[in-house]
Image 1: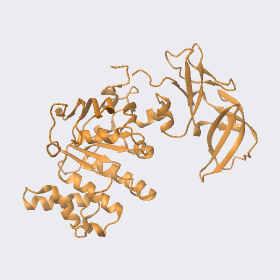
Image 2 (image 1 turned 120 degrees about the horizontal axis):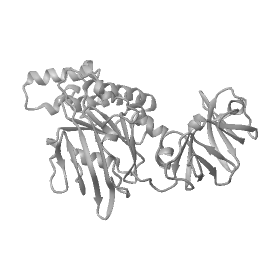
Image 3 (image 1 turned 180 degrees about the vertical axis):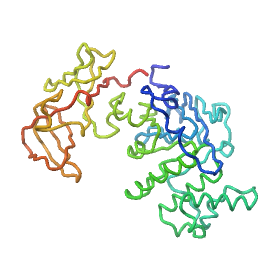
Image 4 (image 1 turned 90 degrees about the horizontal axis):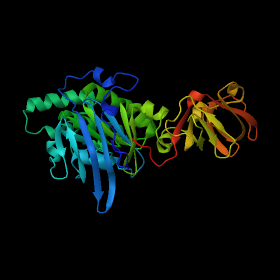
Length: 396
């Protein structure tokens, strides 16, 4: 495995059981009677260059048949470029892409997009307004018997809950209904792989949340392998079997959502998911105690950071894991702080507390009496402190 900036992620970090031995949920998923079959996907050392600029820097990942993998990251990180390479809409500058063991893309040879057995759902839905819902969905089934077209179209429309809208036109549908049409059209041809390019970003917040669950249930029912691109961490965390977190064309971390959240490997991974406080400092000889740069905080963690004794590091502390006031008493880490700001956010209070020169964001239950300027104890369990190196990227 390489240790340079062209980070490789081993296949079994994606498609095998985790170190804890947890079974992969994909194996137990039911499938609908739609004759759909998901395929494995393997991306090896993929590179994409535009002139002298390399947008994707030798990334590798894989996914089992029927899995749901999300490429997550900020705008410009290379996730959509990677998706377009898988679809055949962009040529790779290096590396290879395999679907079901078949190489479909290298620098010297590319399988045409229409022959890859891959469908794509775009952000814009691409629903033809001059066609009915049924015609939109069945468009890709030309060349097969009419009875089969009718039956497959009806089955998929029923699956996405659009049977009663079969004769409506695209202009007569809401955004959520158009998205369901796009999903039905992607499923009806029974692809080996479906790619989703930020498909929910045009929907309002409430409908987006509803469609997240509908899309995931649909994917589980059909059993088709799916690769999903988004910059929305909520979508990635709630929908994915595995997440590939990207930044500036590199993979920062690839793992199950819960593992990335609880055990980020880089400062970027810690900051991008959830509300993380990063306390910078230097680790002790055991690698389990960090003294902050201004010495106002000494943070103790349950797990040491191997190979980093005496090295610069950051302690990652999630906002919801910090306790204030009486709740901080007796915890492994207790610091003296001062409340700087309190915001009411319904289910909880969003509190900014300063410990020495370090500002900490805290989420606590509503009802805790807090005032700006108030001196208060700040506590964190050692199990809720996680160390990451301060280096640009850890070795992988």
